[in-house]
Length: 446
Image (cartoon, rainbow, N blue to C red; front, side, top):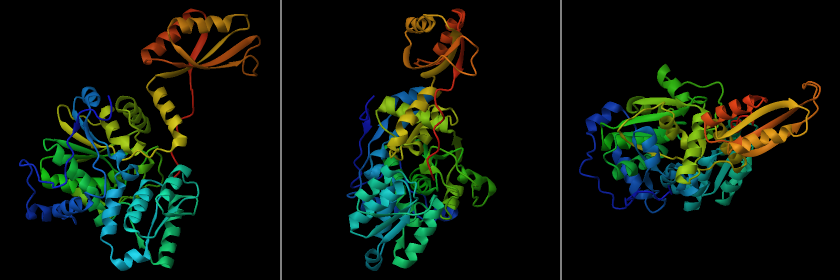
């Protein structure tokens, strides 16, 4: 299925709300005690219209068949800069005074926020400085520089970069642009929810990745106003679940460490602005594993022919894995970004294929007799299994005398074929066992 499959009409220029959608009363807004009103998001949408891409909203037949829900995917990885972040960044800068614009803007980021801020600053001709850790991805650093930002490498970690950014801000007198913990940023991100629900007003639920909470906070405000009955569900990586920990504790909680391939949602502590909004407006938060995220990203690559980073695939992972079940419900999912590091892409895909039992490694030992390896490979070929790699070892301190060993990586259809292959080889007299083909994908540097 191509990216153009059943794309929903996306004309939101002179946006007029569907008759089914009615904003909630001011009393309801006050009851939630949120700092952003639906009218603010509406105004932001009108302002942003000529400045951003209006990305396709696509009905996914494959995901719907797999999960039992009616799933629509918002292709926000096609947004300027490759993620939703530019929405909040542009709107934030639109609110700066002329004096603030002349003094410039600054932020610390090694990811999508950096590119969003750089694009926004370029749109207004504002001097822009981005502080990134010294071990930041060269791909992302180069992309940020290409938008005209000055990139400063400082510190071994993201926290070090933030500290350096604070010091530079004082020296330069520049305005700091937060990644998520800011009312204007939340307002800008909320336009994504307005777009989605305006296109599919019959939606029963919106499932949104959570990092610091800026996106889901904005979407929740817009969605609750447009359709009070809608379910809003957040998704976090289980190695970076700071928002769920905070919700359960009833106050902001800082994680001691982060461990996830979804670096776009790896945040140690949620925002002070976003936390109470999510407390009041979000129905549930579920967790997904790295393996589930990688599997979802691979599925999107194969079925929709699109490249989505770990954070962007996390909401899809929640439904694909069964962690979140919404049978027969109409569901909206934003694919929040597609800026995966090209150096990790191959390992990312390989790890996904292994977890799906489509790449399978086995270790075989056999006597030192001519033709034994060839006999084993012929058996494998007869089962129509493609051989990817063979590593042959004939001398080792771990091997008995006159015994050889081979590590063979294969392309298989599913787990059942892997098990069948092991049984056939054992029946033919080979000592075989499943082996680890590669090391797991390491989480990106913070």
